[in-house]
Length: 134
Image (cartoon, rainbow, N blue to C red; front, side, top):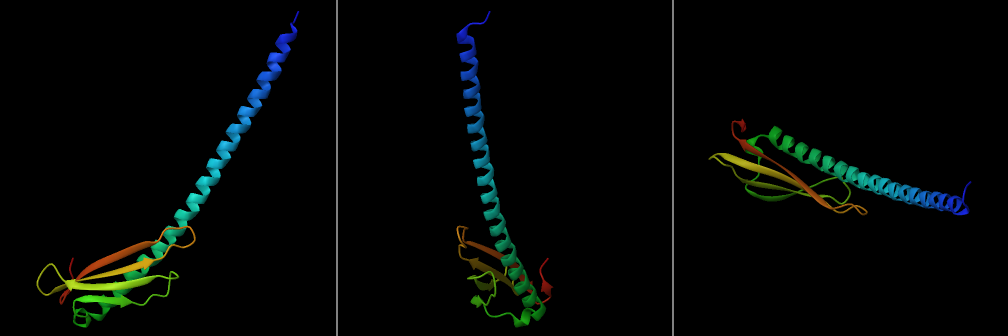
């Protein structure tokens, strides 16, 4: 023989279980969407960084191809860039770690795009009259 209160308890427990399951589902979906948005931001920032790195490397290779004699005097010089949009660059030429050497640093700065962060990347190379220092 079953009592009337036993059936009521089970119905209430199943309603509570359904609400808890729905709550967990909402929390999980929110976390998945948040992770996807953060991943997209990170991918965009990394793409910008890779493009800037390639520009730095290309500029240093062009300077190396021109030779040590073609290097400008120590100082800071602007670098013309085509991308990423709004990016600016500079080249810093300084005395090297040994006599007869120059340290060349190329920096690329880019502004914040949308809700992504602004950034900077740079590469340096020590150049000598005999070729790049290794």
